[in-house]
Image (cartoon, rainbow, N blue to C red; front, side, top):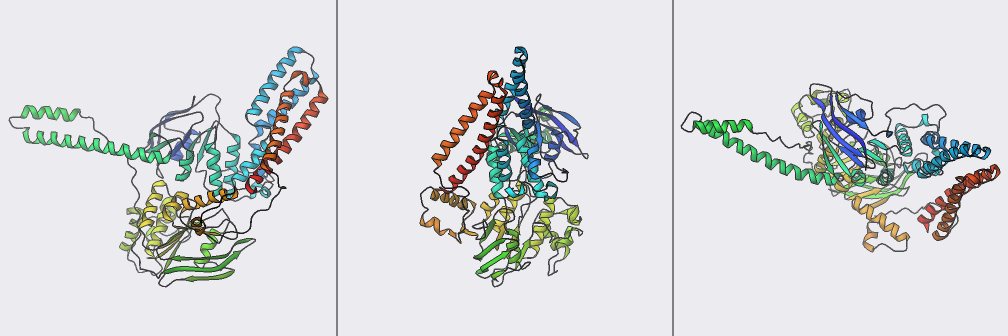
Length: 629
């Protein structure tokens, strides 16, 4: 693969200490590369320098000639009246321009009699047709629809005014536009933010199969493992390059650290021996030997300390034992403009760790707010168990006052902790020294999350209810939180889009994938296994009794068919026939003799358009048949 991007010895200073101190790496065409490092290490700064939005103090960024780079815009203003579809369609403008040019060339070829002019026009026409075929330029409507739906937009959203979208929807639309543009190099900074699990899985599949090179920053471990082929680690301003995905990086990093520690420790032992000899003999009979040892010490090239990324400190205190049943629901339901959930019955027992999964807008946060009493369920009953004291972490961090210093913001409701005790709770989550005296609103996102977790710990609750607690936390902070929750002696209920986190922490799941949620006894791996079994069951096999025991409250409503029943083989035959006819028309339209007849060209163009529209419908019919048949 040819070289696409060269980043060479980039330095950047915002203070006396450099943020980037000689960062260097290469990306070749088609490579899928991830960039990892703790919050504040300079990842976003490096990306801004690569994209030209930030100037380095020194070093060079070199892009291959004629190569294109695309990255997610941080701010954008849509024109009034611009729709979601129009914004997405704008990514295809180069292909649209080529189509228009091709049509004009076809007309000119049909009207021209000069053989030399025909040859020149035909050569350009052939170039356009080849490029359009390579970029699938004749089916971009279907591509736009597929990408928008994959990222969570519904068909009824396509004509919505883009300037009326929420912040999360804007980010998803800009991501869709970037994917449709297909630049040579995509820069993806946290692309799964604002995506639910379904959209994240779709994006993983899209990127894993993409022919474009990309540089990806993400705190989603599953996402990194699925799509990355190389891992760049940025710490202390420089970059180490590891082959493989994130899990492979963790393995290789640990091996490298063990070697570096042994090498460092061995050298330190050798230095201590030499220094001890010099101290003992610098004025005695072995003075000459001592001087020789001293010169040897001066010539030693010191081995640097291993470049470790320490896990942040996180720890929950011991809590009072609750009763056997912590919380119990019976047939609870909640609706707004549509039903969110109904007939939801479950029971969480002491020490269990439950997770809630589901797409954006399905009612996960509403369910938590009903359980903690901030909202009232429309139907059903919620019972809190004996000696249960719960603490609620809301994803907007509304439970901590941004105008207070951290030391005051975590003051528990009972207000019985002195300053030192509150400092101790903050220290359990890595907020120490002057950070404890800073206003919460002046802290970074990750630091504010740690303050909110410290407030939970200070409440001394034995039932933690957590709504997206990993937001703003880097991979190392998430790992520290996982470890802290695993050792927590109480009970937990967690909403999270972080599948790895849920898999590591939870032993039960509530999947809100329709008005009738599904209860699963197991973690995310169990959920994935059961999804695979459902797919197998659709194809004629049935899950085992043990598998069925893990599913309760299974939804009964299935989507209705849009198309009449047809066998997959019959639809596939129609698709093949349409594709063959379309290919033949493309061949005809690239033939100079064919193009001489303007009427013939016009009819062929009309037939081509009709066949392409029919093919899109056949694709949709095939997808539905694959699900239902």
